[in-house]
Image (cartoon, rainbow, N blue to C red; front, side):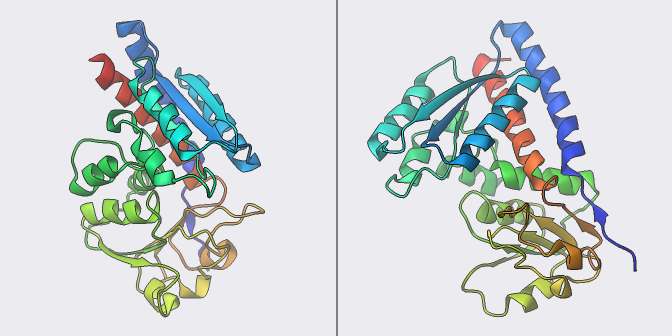
Length: 282
């Protein structure tokens, strides 16, 4: 039996970062100012600390300055909003990333909305979701945007295809569905209340798993020849798709890790440079 071809997010992301580095160098040369991404972290969650450090390292590779703001876990919504508004008003900062989760005591949506849309390079604000949904200029949510770039890289045209998005989070599932819809896919959202998830997945030409439950999507439910994008990441480097069984039926599949993750960071860096160019008028 022929196994699915792997969609190599690491290699694709590397090319995007290399091109982004060239663009960043051009912005710096023309304006005397390097693009700057501010990362804000509330608390010391080990996974979040690792993610932020990884993003800082990638910034350096791409010629982007990184400004890190570490806040204590006890930070209130008001304090976080104040920090983000301050960064939004700072002309030396071109993009802002609020690392989530921020803690149950914080109103995450209020915090996101404190980010100026022109600096929302992670695509988390209402404004970004609206421009993304209507196909207007703006910034896409980074993971869904990275998924679309990966589909393009492997020649997957969503037009006319049935796409099933498993998950409905505001920064992953919902925007992924909207981006697929904008590319003329017929989109079905599935979630924890979906009855007979297996039946829905079996109809899908494109499956986007983004629910945060390890190995929820089983190979036996994958339509032969389908494209499977696993945006989940769970303990032990396990995705939301049972890779070993799905790889026997899919035509294309993303590995975990090395699939969607690198594309998310590459999209973040690319959008930071774009934001800097717009703000600096070049």
